[in-house]
Length: 563
Image (cartoon, rainbow, N blue to C red; front, side, top):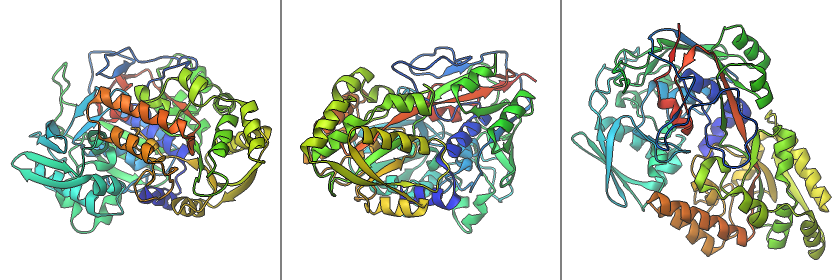
């Protein structure tokens, strides 16, 4: 995570801009970047939604057929690209890693029954620590300017990529690979990955786009050449990129995948034209005039105002949270943590910040579907808003006053609104806050080093319960006591460890629920607030858009353009 946040700080990419950029990137892929399934009381329906699919399949937005080949899909981005190195990029380029490279296998965050087999055509688990991936033949590298032969990717490529992640602390997934992978071995067309302990999230994590598999030739020599050039076996190739302006991609003529229904080679679209347009009003005007075919809409109201065009409405996996350091006063007292929790009225964030286009989060955020506790359980039992109880607790401990740091130098649009609401909610309960706005870099450094009493914290995208639960453990989410440290309770540590080591899906859901309930009984020190919905608008000419399976949508290339 240190490398992740360092990258964000160095690139000066705000979270909101990144989410929008990912949405635009997904539109270029014919999919939505931030996707999930709402459970309770969703806001008004989008103008158009995907047809209901099976639990183990994506939904389809704006279906049509028969598919046609051709056309260039134009989209707008709200942030810069950054590096196209598939293991280092954190900005908009990361939305295109699966466009030019491949993953082994990807598991949907919102429909975990749905697995997308890419470079690996199957895998086996002979025991709880061993995964044997069978590499698909014929995944052929695209024509490129980096001198990489147009050959099939193989098991040695997988080994080279995973070893980079395991040993290079600058990569985004170093923490995952270094902490969890024990060894990577190759035998013929198989790659065997052995984990240090049984690890429930291995398939989820290894299929993230920061773990894309590049040809091993790219990982030798001058890696800086990967900043604006690519050579992969994905559906597209990067032709050119001008930071702050645009990037262009063309269809990979060597792409291995075919449409399961028609047998036609994918992708159908000839190319992608990705433009950098920071102002959403300008994006909207370009969309309405037909200059671009998709853009991420700011609100549900704006989405509905566009008229009869395909709109995907999907929840974001990111959120803002309140973090209390239980190693410092006053948060070493569970009554203080409980008072803060009882004073939070999440419905105000939903209404004021997002106009109803959000839902309240528990310890595991609601976009993670069945891993999250039900809304009625949260409201009535585990995190009720109870101002009278909060005031009584404040009185019982003789008053509550604390310092709260936050990243004042960011331009995240909703952060200031969260801050104002939170301060007022605490004031209503009799809790005094000393506001401590800090430069983004200083905030990250203090957050990493636990040099704070409390923080109104930004959080990256979490597609499994692993890290949200990890915040409550003695070692924190990364086991190294960085950023956030739990209350030091061995029962919580054991419950979270059990969830992380339970491999069977149904049993793991129960373990995740049990861990959350136990944490609530001990008065948690990390409180996610709400996760919003994101809206993506598409031109009517874009057909068969896969939605509803989270960022797995990036990998599905059966969309086409009626041109």
